[in-house]
Length: 393
Image (cartoon, rainbow, N blue to C red):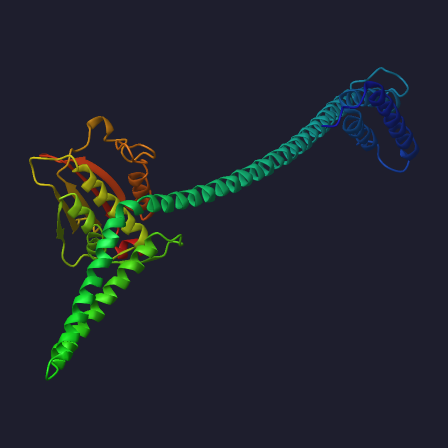
């Protein structure tokens, strides 16, 4: 807000304006009527507007004195007769009102201008603060994005390393699955030679043996390709996956490990399960981890059957449920909430990453993985995944 006029400036301005008004009125009194004393009113308004309160009050007083002395009967005297008194009172009151209104109007405009300038200043300051805050927020978002990218990259690398660490446990199963079709190939090849060497050659049986060789060779190739894909560092690819087919493939893979540990593997697969959208290799890794975990939990069990039951079904929510139940030692109540934590393990040679990685994979697919103790013995690890229609909606 602009600083008010000083008393000296206001006083000088008031004297100058009233003198000018007096001169003009005396000069023009023979030409125009002086009843309105328009020049003195103008002096009061200008004095109050430009000179502030001091200038306005002084201009009003000097105007009243000038009008009374020079224009009220008796002229050139400070006495007033009864006829001139009402006119003087009217002039003085009008000058007072005009001076007050002009001063008030000037002050109001000055305060309004000050408020507007102050508001603009605060808006500019706030704009600068918001711009600075926005820049900081963008920097934080960029930093968070970099951290998330680094986290997911590290998680993917850790998942690959976990799969690599599981290769030793699956080596015997791989050997068993590859040797079995190869042995069948050799057997059928010998049979084919025998049928061709007979007299006359039995072409029908030879053809059947060759067909069996082709089937067993394809099976061996599928096993090798499957294992290679599982332990290769490849980007996740989400496709429609039939969970029952995935369970059967994993069951074939761990058949050797189950036989060595005298574990009976059973499946209770639901019919007509909807497909799920997911990375086949990652979901396969989850099922492998859960089944191997169940097999290892029954290593020290004697006196009761070692049964591993894999069950699949559709829940009322439309999600697909997969449960792996074992008859092992079960879960210690104090560890029930920690088994999915990274680096937590109850095994002497364990890394504590299998269930943690499995939980991360399931959550990344929009599902949930949890564990519960069985009422009789052992534990059940189970997860849910949204069906394909839910994943794409």
